[in-house]
Image 1 (cartoon, chains in turn orange, cyan):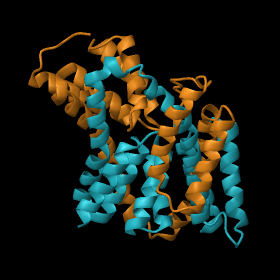
Image 2: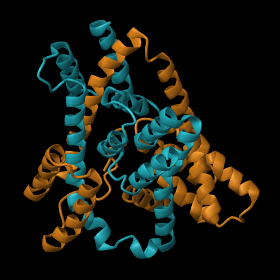
Image 3: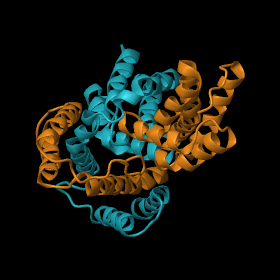
Length: 201
Length: 177
């Protein structure tokens, strides 16, 4: 990977590279991967394909969205902490502006009966979408009786007890470490780049 | 103090935002409910708008919530809050990258974490269904049909979700206007 001298010009370049990748994160961060590769590998020659694969693997595994994490990581590799901040801000700003515009439009027009009627329909689609996301993640996540039990237990606990969902996640991660040591490694694919509106696992 | 509540709530969420946007919805909803920032129906609309916009759905929804509660400063505070944890963690990982990459703990936690994420998302769907009157004592037949229709389209066609949302908006106008 090419080590460039850290300069204001470099920082600025990192910023706007990610600024223009950002709008492609429509429908889940994975959509931006081809654009990312084009900008990083081809146009700027900052990294090669293996580096990008590593970056994406890490970006999926840590909390946060794959798109922003990838930006942070690449920015760091190119220009240290300042680079990571520039890349992250570049990635976040366009989507931030767009959601603000949509939010203010919505808040402005939400009281119109026709808008309310439309959103009654839209809410139904949202329920379907979320349910569908569960089905999709379930296909890779549920591989045996233990994982099926884990999914079911999660639903039951969240529906019928006041346990905070955050707590359930932490326990789940912990159990994953504990139970995997006792069993053979599970049959799931490690980096399944299948995605759906950011629900890719 | 409102700004502090916003920041802390979303900062916490930022640390555990695994599994993509929809998994975070119950967690964000928990905070919204706890602070009574909006009604469940309003929250559903926030999710709808957040899903229509590019960018991670978690970041979009908290930005929207922050904006609704405290205007532009609220929005900026919220997006910073949810983004900072992953920034910090990625930096930490980047620094020790070569050592951590194949650590067995990293991979093995996902064995149970993944089905938990599935359960979380399924729970979100059930909760949204309840909040929006699909699962309730009174039957909204048209609503249930629209939802089933949407589900069928998702399961058996490749229609882009954004288009589905537009189509269901139009369906909503026909049915409810």
